[in-house]
Image 1 (spheres, helix red, strand yellow):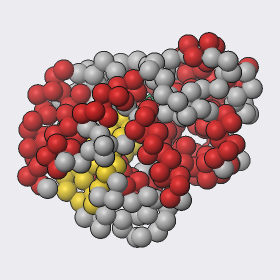
Image 2 (cartoon, rainbow, N blue to C red; image 1 turned 120 degrees about the vertical axis):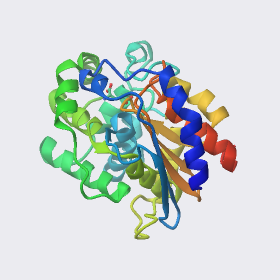
Image 3 (cartoon, rainbow, N blue to C red; image 1 turned 90 degrees about the horizontal axis):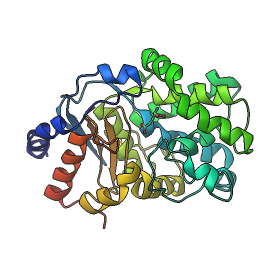
Length: 305
Ligand code: GLU
């Protein structure tokens, strides 16, 4: 495994030059674009890593996976999916167009920004702080890391420039999709996107999903099996933005990426993989990270299809 990870980094590093760090969140544009790291955690909790696997980055959209699981545990599947759909969009992650042109303003799925903001409005708790603490507590369990917290600078940066997400949230409030106060939901959303992790953390989260919700370290069931399977299905159909189809063909693993440069992948029954490379391709996925996953998937014949 170690040799494969080292070779995957060597193979993928040149591809970081094909991407750029996200610039629409000013703080993310300051990050060193050449970083590249990978980590793997197997079903016994054994881990391997290579490259910049200890460097931290913000989860961004990877947090949508955790928020969705928590919202379903809080409200049940039926209620959550009365507010958000189950279909891929083919549009960019922050697109507003379908909210108005579809019959209802229900966002198409929980992996796009509109859907994730709607999901956040369903997380239980007394106010933003309580909801955020619950969500971060859950992420800590999934990543088996008690130190995880959010990055204040990235949060402030997105909160002061997130006009598109504000538009999505206001539109959904008007349409009766969002419950509660719009600014409070957005605060929770921007803070959850700023949760800081490294490649090992998200490899652990991938391993929990790969094990249908069971921690590979403690054996504790962190997510009911049905919910773990449900989110893995969303990861296959919508996890890599509007590149999910091509990614399914080339890599074939339930995965979720974020514009911070991370990608979490789950190999059912085998392992979790976490990659980090902040240089993004035109769809918003880590340019080097995708190559790492392509390489490992081919070498170990991991595609689920
Ligand atoms: N915080 C980011 C946004 O809402 C997350 C996007 C992403 O990672 O896809 O734009």
